[in-house]
Image 1 (cartoon, rainbow, N blue to C red):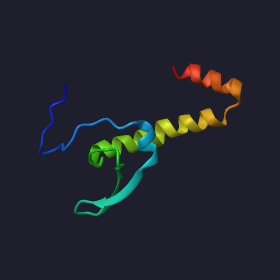
Image 2: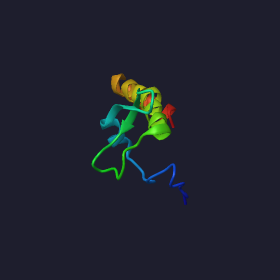
Image 3: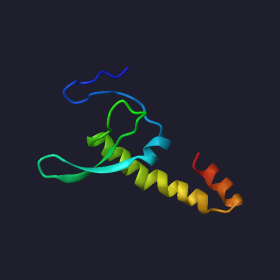
Image 4: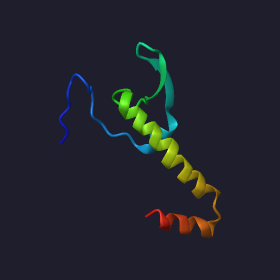
Length: 87
C-alpha cells in the first residue's frame, strides 16, 4: 500500500500505457516557464505532471515507442524472434 504525502501527491492511481501513448501534452509550468510533459485523460482522476510525467515521458520515448516501431517494421518471422528476445 502506498502512503502519500498530501503536500506532494494529490492522487495515486494507475494509468494504462495505451492511454499514456494517446495523451502527451506540454505545458509551461513553474516560475521559469519551462515546457514540461503532462498527461491528462478523462479516465484519469488527475493530471500526471512533475517527476511522474517526466519519467513516463522518458520511458515512452526511449523504451516503449522504439520497441513498438521495431516490432511493427519487422517481418513476421523477425517479429516472433524480437518478441521472444524481449522476454
